[in-house]
Amino acid sequence: MPDSKKALTEHGTTPEHGAVGEQKDVSWGPACLIVVIVGAVILSVGMIALAALLNTNQGKRAAYSVREQIIPWVEQSSLSPMDRQNIVERLNSLASEMEREALSSRQLSRLAIRLTDSPVLQWGVVEQLIAKANASAGFTAQEKAEFSVSCDRWLYAAADGKLSVQDMELGVQNVAIKEKRSGRLSIRDDVNDERLREFQRRVATICDKLVISKEPYNKSVSQVFLEVIDEALDVKD
Image (cartoon, rainbow, N blue to C red):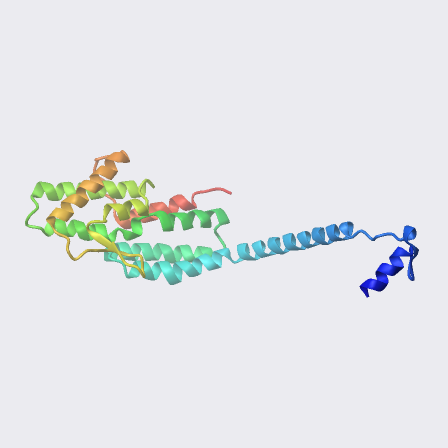
């Protein structure tokens, strides 16, 4: 009761402790500090254990993503049949290495970056645009050759790691659209000679800005893809 406690205090005594001068408050500071420290240690140990568990399964999770997401995406892409076959074979081999935990965490990280940032797997749309320009009666033989050379320079830029997915999407803006569900680039229905020429000008501008050689670049998309993979794996922990 509040009133009774006040009265006892004013008289200088309490039933439990006697004189007020003899009463000592117990400090909870040290006890709370110990609880906080113990809790932090337990949390740190838990996080370390979780990180170790994730690292243990990192390869298997990456292999699952390659087999269930990337390979089906490539198989349904507009890349040439030979390029699709070569790329899928390498991806299957890569997934097997991941499942055996044969790749380091650094190699897995570099692979993830290369596979998501390299535009090589989207190159089917560029090949379709080249075919469309070659089939156009409005393009002269010289224009068709220049169109092809510009696209070869673009592939060279991708192989050299200078062309990102964002750069590619910007370059094909007037001739292709990005599917919302798959993220795949596909040719627009309204592509005409004027749009193709504008695309070629954009590609040439990007290549000039990146200082890409105009020398012939006679490599297939799958060859470039294999080089990108090999470069990502070529690290030492």
